[in-house]
Amino acid sequence: MSNQEHLIHHAEKTEDKWEFESEEDLENFVWENLQILLKLNPLKRQYPINREKSDILAISEERQLAIIELKNIEDSYVVQQLTRYYDNLLNKKPLATDIDYRKRVHLIAIAPSFHRHNFIDRKHHQLLFEFFIFEILESENQLNFILKNTEENSFSQIKIPDPQEKIILAHQPKPDLITISEPPKSLLKILENKSIETQNIFLKLR
Image 1 (cartoon, rainbow, N blue to C red):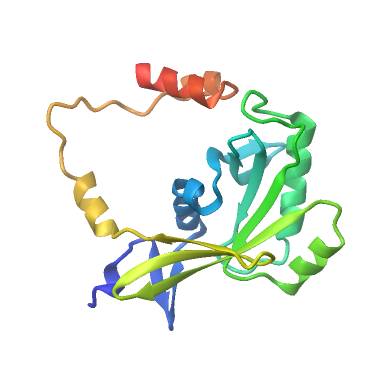
Image 2 (tube, rainbow, N blue to C red; image 1 turned 135 degrees about the vertical axis):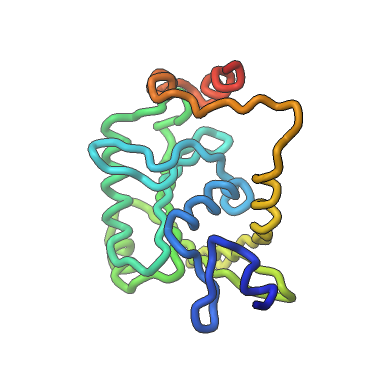
């Protein structure tokens, strides 16, 4: 097995290109690198409202909301999904301590490619959508995640770390540390509508 074939556990090589094994792997990667890729701060993942869940909610430094829908394969209904998430959030206005709902909401779709129907839907829609195409490129035994804006001819690039190192570190016991279990669901429920700063303070004290 070559070095390239085991560089990352959440991506696999199919024919002549690399791709994420699942949409969850893509979501994990984007969530962890939101600031670098889109200059946004992560807020919520798989946030449920009206029996639907948006992949990622993020905010700018000015508390401007971004709704991000991720696709690991081409999908012709991403505009409709974002529209529903937008309507649900604007009707309920949750997380108001973190989000300034007076500002325009960014509606962002990230996918390896976009169906022509996506562009038709966007063209005749009243809301504004941003489409980003991602790809994983291999260069000198290193994999890089490239995110390109379809409209602005701009892109972000980030190195994909070798997960083998992460696996080793994750299984090495840390001396003199006490293992704390996951916070109970009852506590998470209480903190759900608190600000991110308040949540972090409570969880650190725990």
